[in-house]
Image 1: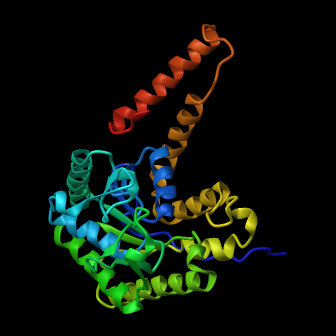
Image 2: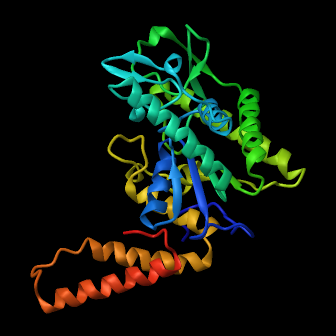
Image 3: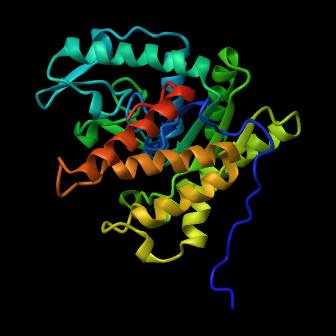
Length: 321
């Protein structure tokens, strides 16, 4: 008896993710779930340098500013609720000092620029097609920073506008890096504050735009472009509220682990799977709490653990525990 419908996935034929890869992850909070997995297994990755970005226009702005090496100044920031903020970034970059915020913004621009140039893989997770436009500047913002909602106009991005944004994102990346694989996915996180019907409409706009872009590229040369169905896996393979966190909006840790395993099947090289097992063995050993710190058994355990760490670091110097 078959009790689950499973989405067929095909292993990528080239440019698989390995320990020599450099990965940039941008987008919604779900991309951070994948980023945390990559970090746990000690892959080389940079995730959301400007914090969580929910919609495609915010990601486009970040990539445009990074590629063009924008220098943020006082005109780009504002003071609200005892903090300095920037409408291009998440509140995790906000600071009590304008100098600290500007330094953080400009450092992240430099870091993102370097990562875009060097990345072998760029993973972009889109969360919503709903955006907020500043009434004062007419610009779409990445984050409202709890500024009163009357200062913004809420809009649903049309599919054509999302296509133009994704096309601009790809063009900016390809201008400086022609070899990176760009992997799009739609976040399984439900934005029900927008409304249940509105959330479905939003996700539909995102998926329609992504697949139109991918189909256009396939008709040319594919150009290192791919789609990973994280949203579809959550909606179809994990079709049960037990796979949601307590808020009934975000995927539970079990769901995140499951989607990560499915991602591994498609994108992680066979050689790397063995190294991942070694890394996980060390990670679990580091969490071990001994009963007797000075016992011979524990000292042997420590020596063996250090030996395993050194063996990995001889081959992959970036792996640091």
